[in-house]
Length: 489
Image 1 (cartoon, rainbow, N blue to C red):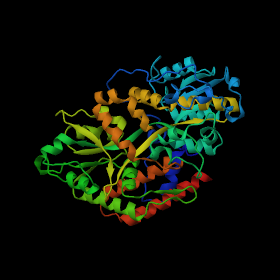
Image 2 (image 1 turned 60 degrees about the vertical axis):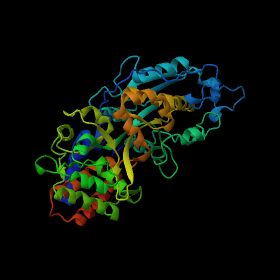
Image 3 (image 1 turned 90 degrees about the vertical axis):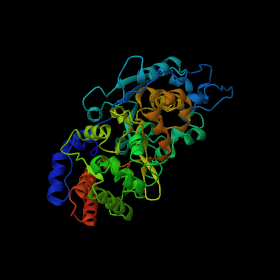
Image 4 (image 1 turned 180 degrees about the horizontal axis):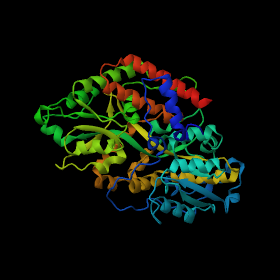
């Protein structure tokens, strides 16, 4: 699991990069690699369970909580050749990290209800792995020592590595099983950008998406109207033009140019590019679309309409961005949807979340997903884990988790269970309209280290106006290739 534990080797990587490619300096913040969860935004509303099991339903008819009200007396075949009765007493160890670990609330409440009401006699034993400084490192250490759960909610960035290491199973046999599988209608209920994109080796499904946060553009609508901006941006040209709108003292209103990988990747997608080609071919940052974005990115900075805030060495960069937004020192900033609670403008401004835009009006938000994986253990434990997975990823449970955590669901049919919550949290609800534009990050675990080179290269493009942009992107191609090869050794 080389790429996942790469943080412990960053010093060696930096020596390697500095000696081979002096133009690119990797940002060495371990938290950027190993952080598992963002902070939960403080949202309004009283959380109520959204679903209950109907104990009279034959187990073979249960494919999601949304189907539980319709029972059937028609005999069903045993799932994957295992007798339903053999699941009685099966224990399932479930690891997760994104929670507050409150008894009777959040994930604990979700698991407790499954244990009370599932009729197979399955008992899920939850274990919060997030109660440490570095949750992902804690999980990796446990796996290396041979400690392994049956099922886990994990960051999509590490799921590929776990599957390639032989730790987790392909979920396709479970997904398509006639007795215990997930109906096609339920599969289609997931947002396409988060369900269809996360496929390994062309066919392997290593995880099922459970929740997501999205990278967005925060936009001060009240201030824009005072600046005589009549409409929201529709194309990326609108973003650039509005950033140059005069504000106080004749200074541009501005967009904070934060060279975080998620922001850069979102704009690349919106420009029609994709830096990740394939496992064999790796990455390419010198494409026409990426060059076009890089030129626009730099021109905005040179015109004085974009404000660079360096990520390194500045651990307070994100807080500084939101502070400028709150003080009307920037019309727009980019950030995670989980950062909503940091917006506290002194003018009681109306603001909303917008997608990243491309030249033709293409809309994109990059999704940071939490997916459910099943570890390779025994056939009965894997089947029991799959049944809990279906419960966990059902629309009702996803809606319940969204109310508790502030994460967004990965299924469109969850929205029907969030109507009151959306009314009470309009800013959060504005992000729901963006989920249909979701794109996944590159699935290969190498992205965890390649993204640091991307951040450094694009920050240098902004900070060094005389740098040759084409050469910089060519060098970035070489660096990404070398890092990919280094990780394979």
